[in-house]
Image (cartoon, rainbow, N blue to C red; front, side):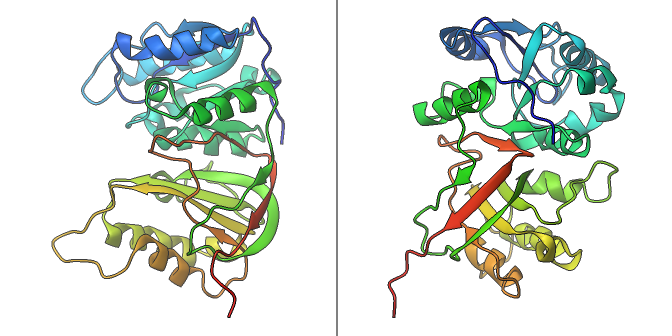
Length: 296
C-alpha cells in the first residue's frame, strides 16, 4: 500500500463537500484548528451549495473533489461532513493524476466509499473527524488526527476495557468504516478485499435487526471467516423496530464470529461520537485485545 507523504507546516489542505450540505459558519472552528497546526485551508467552490440532501449537484461535488485530487499544491483533502452522496460521484472522478501524486483523504461515515476506492487503488487514507465535527469531538480525537496527518501515529490498536472483548492478538492491514456503507457496497468493483485484514466497523441510528442482517451478510459471504481481527467502534443510537429485538450489538456480533478464533474488540473510540480516534486505513496494524473478565 502506498502511503501519502505526511504533512508539514505550510502545507495546503482542501475542504470539500462530497456528500451532505453544510453551512459556511460550520467550518470556522475547523479552519482555525488547521491554521493552528500550521496548515493553509482552502474551501471547494461548491462546498456550501445545497441541492436537497446533497451539497450541490453531483457534478458540482465531483468538480470540487476532482480539483482537489489534481492540485499538486494540495497535500490532503478533508471532507466537510458525511450524510449521503459520495457513492453518486465516485465514478465521475479520475484518479489517474492522484495515483501519481497521492495525498491524504480524511473522513468517516459516508466517506467509507472513498476509503474503499482508495484501498482498491493501493493507497492509504485516514478514517477520522471531518470539518463539521471539529467543534464537537474531543481534543484527544483532534490530536489523533493531527498525529495521523503529521506522521506521529501508532500502528497498534490498544485494547479497550469492554467486558465483551474476545482476547487475542492479530495483525494485518486495517480496513473498514461504516457498517451500513460496507453492506451497501457489496459487489461493487472497488469493494474491499477482506482476506487477512483487520476489519473496523461503526454505525449510527440503525435498527438492531438490521445490524444483525448486515453482520449475517458478512458471515455468509465468507468475509468474517477471512479476517484476522475485528474492531467494533461506537454503535450509536441503536433502536428497535415494531418488534423488540432480543439481542444486543455485542451478542449479534459475537454470535456471528463464534466459529472463528481471531480477537474481537468492542467500544473502540471511533465513529459517530465525541471520541473519534483517527486511524490510517491500508496501513499494517497490530491488534492486541485483553480480557477484562476475572479468571476462573
